[in-house]
Length: 277
Image (cartoon, rainbow, N blue to C red; front, side, top):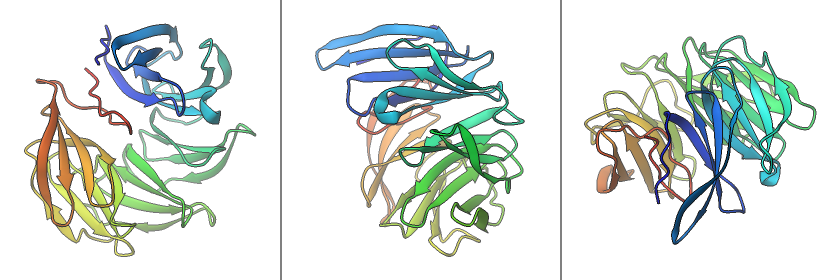
């Protein structure tokens, strides 16, 4: 199954219960597709959602709404059936939004180009937490439900642990030699794995975030995105266009899963590993 776009997509997400996938484009457009096992995806609609590039998109509210974040600093809530805007926070951040992740059924987090993380209550449409520990763009985030914390990586080369209950930064790593581009939590919460532009995967032990405990050099190019498959394995997407199955501790490239020629892998989502070309 392949979906072709006239302009470059930045992100995508699958509907939690229906065969729908939404993509966000460099033009600020959002595209919704219906897919099936034996047919090419059908484009249901395409809407101009943002003035500038739409870098992040996620389904929320049991799939009734999708939220999008843009370089124009805004967050937009759109109706899945019609694509029409429901709510628009025009100045959600002071700088362009680079990442958007779902935390709970009623909260999402956004990260911008200058290292600011904000947590939003989707019912109240208001900001409930703000963290500004990073000095460069937020490249990735993940939510740790057991401890109610957000892990974040940044272009400044650091990993941060942000406590939502106390509204404070609990820990931040020392500056690594590389930017940190992506992260997954592995080994039942004991290891945090971060992707870098050099292709190295940095492993941090939970509770000891100052410096990485291990460095895995299995990739030859930038690891821009990762997806946790289980506690022992992850799927990596690299700038060489290859999607790989990777084992963690022991660290090894198990096998390539797919290849997208010279196009870099921009996003991976659970259920399908897809390249944005």
